[in-house]
Length: 431
Figure: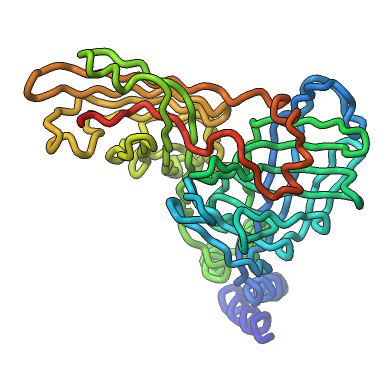
């Protein structure tokens, strides 16, 4: 523990004088303690929020009404995680294929929770391991590495009582026999009365717990308030020292990434052949949204590096990377509500298939899981123009899923139901 003494000597050298030396000693002790413990893994507080729909209108843990807002929180220290499960997008998980990343975490990393709904409270000890495939389990599943990116999907379940008295689901695992995906279903159930509430509008936000180096900067900022008592040169030298001791580095915006799964229908115009691709279809939209600091230090959308790809699961093609042109939301909290994208070139095999790209545009609503995409191309031989417009279909109402038995979702560990794949605007453009 030599840091405090060493820093005290260094600061004293920068700040001569009795009063300054006393202040320097305080700075040295504070910064020394902080620097000594400044290296540890990321700790994040994850917030799950939305509204729960009460199809039966029966009170659940004392909460009543057709729509009830909720917010649950889990603070997680990745340094305490003992689960190494990871499956990349497109990997085989059991007998099915993933449509987004799967990151498994152990309950040992949970350091704090706020999981109350009405009269019922759950804790880290109530976590139920989720099993997406034989021999694969984790206490918590997310679609990102939570130490570097905010997740958009999760699969976590808590159960209180024996037998189960109170169930809480923060997302679920869904399979259609071909693909497996984490869905946004949030639900609570009082198994004693059979009353339950659920919805598909769950959103997740993540707030990093400040690192010790960050706290060092705060301490320096407080000391700056006393800067008027110091000579200008000493004040500047103190600021430089704080920057070094606190490990100051330029703010770097982490990209917001995610996968959107939509279902809907395609309307086609053009030659009769275009109608072969009309009707129901499926799509996976993968996006990366970059942020940057503006002149006022606020995190704003950066079109450079922001991109999206659209993958059609029925016809097995993926677009080129399409620039994202507009984003709404609060990027300072990694919250994206909607985004738009557009480009002229979009179909990767246009040249070999004898077509010319006319453009693609899209508008995705992440809050309501809706989207509209239009795409067009021209046959270079016949000069005929093909146009396709996709409009997504909203998820089924939550009460319909609740009627199937929310409790069974947690006990079974997985369910087979709504298709895990998404719906698409683009179609295979040439046979």
